[in-house]
Image 1 (cartoon, one colour):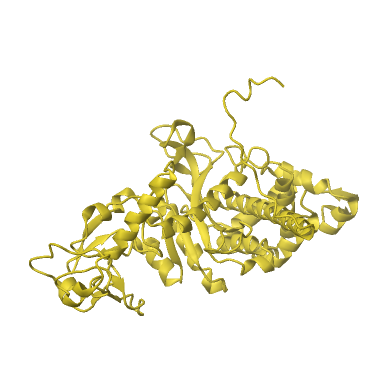
Image 2: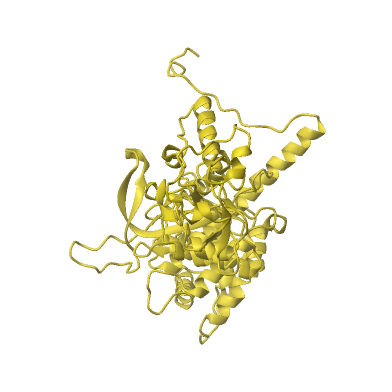
Length: 494
């Protein structure tokens, strides 16, 4: 159980409550339920496994000790005596908050005020010692169903005007898509640095957008705003659903913000995709025009690959890297950089570069160089403009062993959604939140992720303390044991 003091610390550190109070209209008399108490009630209800219903929020508040109720305004002295908070008062305050943080003309995206409030709450839920412990983020999006029924066929009106039809993966029937009615929920989860120690997987940023909106460009401004708030970006890990978007809506803004992309490539973006000054464009890099096509068409390693197959795959990707044009400079202010022929860099032997023919024969040799060499073969170096490989360029060569090890961290985003959709705690399925509109739904999801971060922090601190105690006794850290059960195990006699 998360303590009230911990949740109050998050609410106070975020500064969201007083900022939102200043946005609310002044009434004839003071409200009994403040924004601060409302946020605490939402967190207390979700921390206790309750759904995101206003009745459950009130129930969580009135379940506090009498002293805490008076301090938070849940129990107030009125003219006729003590007055306990009612559901109508909770509904009234929620209506004021969502109206102040929402948009006058809903367009399927959160208002800047709502996004700043949610960012502040999430950032306040991350302890100070963990804010700079790791910069990489794993991003993904999931479905968030609306409580509203979809509009009848041939109509567009329903109880939730910002909800729309969207697609999600149905894990029960394989890799097929299914329709749902609601919104998209993108989020970013903290992951460890490459070769770095483990870190708590906190939800660092999130947003909610209508399914009429593409979730990738809707979430990109949230990430690019982090450096402006003093939070530098590191590696940003994403699946092919993110990388396949137009470069101007994701890849380019993230690079300008200082992020290093580690992403899976969509099947439509893999392999050779045109040329630049004679060099072959493939998998985010430029390659020698004489590079074997089979090496350029390598795909990611299968999950069911054996160690021998993995070793063979890594050997082939390492061989493909020999044909890659080597980078000579970093990107300048306009995004241009220069690369060099692999033969001039001493990685392959090529007759068009006579000094390379004196290299050891353990390097690949170009047996049939181009009959009419282009700039990539005749010039000492080549200028690459920013639009070349703007979508697919990333930190590691795709799909090398270094890329595979780095990309494996992206599973943290899947675990983040798994904890948010766990039926044992808070299952954000249809009916979890019965309020309509983007603002109340996003506020409840944000408070849920704040509660999740507190749970992650508690479990992390418990494991660290246990490891310290084991180290004091000379024992190694405790690890999970995964035991494979056979089909005959359930039938074995006790």
